Length: 214
Image 1 (cartoon, one colour):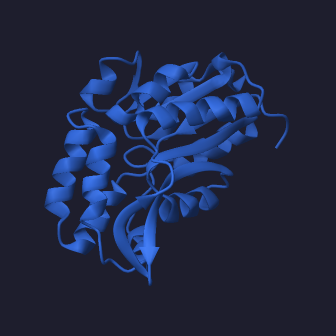
Image 2 (image 1 turned 30 degrees about the vertical axis):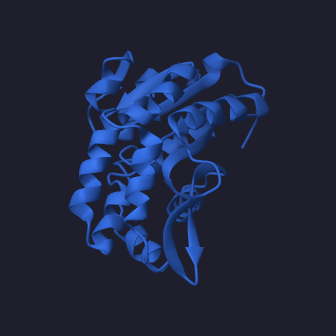
Image 3 (image 1 turned 90 degrees about the vertical axis):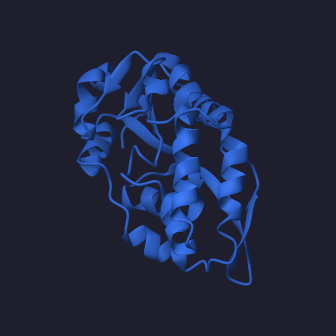
């Protein structure tokens, strides 16, 4: 890729992909309904993200790490994801993923789309089983924002050359911190605060909003 002219940071669950991975893991743990209800409320801004994440992760205790293979095979990228990312990369816009989801899935997604920059939550594993705990830094709404800013500084880009795309309440700070924040098929809490919306689930619909492709 030629010189980096811009940075586009994307949320993963509900944005890059159709599904919420935590809900799929919940299905494997036999508690999908409980987890999906908590996820839905958290994404609408009705619950504190970090405490709700810890609660959902605690319900995954005992799942084998092999569950990530099964879950990865059952997720679907949003329409035209690969084409969208390729167009950005060809135009010198580096794409990064910041997710409140989990590294075993996000890392694979990043590799499949030729993305180098990514950040996600790490689940604790002992003897090949999930312990129901998280390790390391939690990718909270504040950390999503800070990650975008750290990558921007590393790339020596001005704020106006940054784009952030997300769908949930936990993306709000990141979208506000970018030069261009785009609410993609987003919850009402996000659409109320963010000027630019794309309500059709097709990432190519985002392109007309991005003026740094010239």
